[in-house]
Amino acid sequence: MKRKMEIKGIARDTLYFILEASRSTLPVEFAGLLRAEDGVITEVIMLPGTESSSKSALVRLYMLPNMRIAGSVHSHPSSNIRPSSADLIFFSKTGDYHIIAGLPFDERSWTCYDRTGSQRDLPVLDVDVEEDEDWFD
Ligand SMILES: [Zn+2]
Picture 1 (cartoon, rainbow, N blue to C red):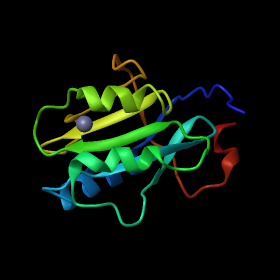
Picture 2 (picture 1 turned 60 degrees about the vertical axis):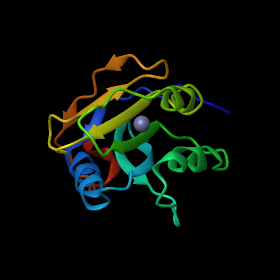
Picture 3 (picture 1 turned 60 degrees about the horizontal axis):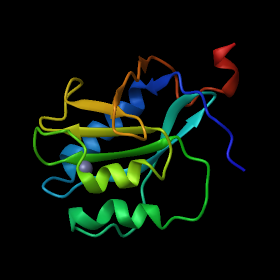
């Protein structure tokens, strides 16, 4: 049962978390899955025991049991944030919002792609992630 999810953006706190996690896992690739609440990406799911091999991180995420996710996030330990061919295969199978963060992991060094690898807008929203879910109204 896959429902089409409309994503309005990503919570600023969640983006900061991603950038911080990307920095702190260097030189290893950081990878996770994105979940959205009320159309806003507010959650990053990291798998325990992610290996230090950057090549395997996304492959292992793909083995996850079926769950509703908005997309994925991973870091590149360089300033090249174009999706690799392996990234594109992964994108096509898992959600429609895929963030790649690159060095230096600041607010401008990331891009969101759709499932075909085309760049797409992902507004950064100032929302309180801990607040109850009625904030949007
Ligand atoms: Zn990649």
